[in-house]
Image 1 (cartoon, each protein chain N blue to C red):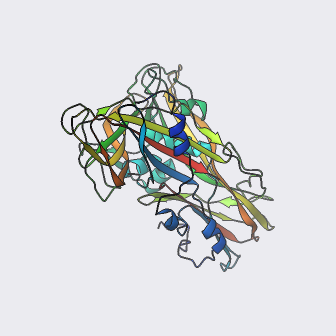
Image 2 (spheres, helix red, strand yellow):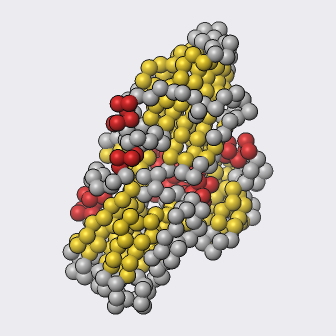
Image 3 (cartoon, rainbow over the protein chains, first blue to last red):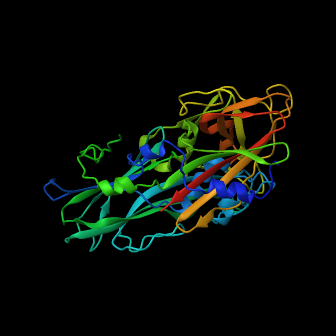
Length: 226
Length: 234
């Protein structure tokens, strides 16, 4: 039997079986390859809290974003239309109307902190209670984020300072993503259409308190390896 | 490890307490799995094989780097296609923009999956791989396999706290002899450009590469289906 539109049930059952025979499974239990690290300093620069925990909760939107690097943007089954994942999961248009030229996409990511909690679902698309960027009441000042990479991973770091006048408690963290669809519109203007998603969501095992005058660093590491 | 201009310590090197129990129970959120089903000429399953897939290539990492990396570092990424030609890439959302070509109603050039290709060689440095070591060509001659079309997922399947998509491709051996498969790669047709259709032709790039931990021997008349499963789990 060769390729069919549907995966044979006997194949799918086997594909989705939990891993049993892979000898490397044991090794994987001892490597924290996807993780969140948080380090908190007081107003004098002294480290007062350090956390490292497994990152557990990538969303379906992360998987959909990743599909661009595997499947591309064009479906192979229909002419000049986007893949089903891009349209069905991310809500991108199947075909962008342009005024000459072509349409293109790129994306960006940013860490967002919050003070709430919620149960994880793969379809979750926002933090429960995002902490605003600034120096007002209940806000944290966000410095520019930075990204680095290794052979199988990508890391992102966010530094914040608390100038709000009070202690701020961080209990949830997410990686936000924005896909930018760009084209020349009917008025002949270059247009950038953003599409926003929650790419990962995690809660801290106990909330992180950042005192007034203090700062904190948050690092998210995502590893692309089975 | 990157240390940013605003970071006065490397937070990856700090002595951070770990939860041993969590280590023991640890399940990765991202998983990639390679599954192979071998069938005889009558379609009966005669072997099933599964291994964890470990190997994104440099081309894949470049496609997964967000705009922030490009803007903060000022660097470009170099993609290497399957004939070892290179192209520089730096996405942007200003000027005329710069990015991956997206379907539209004027100028189209298909950025789509090229296929899951199989080979009979191996190479240890998958990150720098840009082609299979010894690709098996499409056909019914000696040492060849007949490639079927790739199956493209139309959406992401959600099952509880797991989400996944599967791509697959089938191959038949009508070569008259046994063909051994030892390496597998996913190839993407990649085209970059700006909104005025100033296009960079990167052509076909290897984005994912695996060497099988146990080679698959495919006798004449047998066929296989290769499944790649990409999943996230809470």
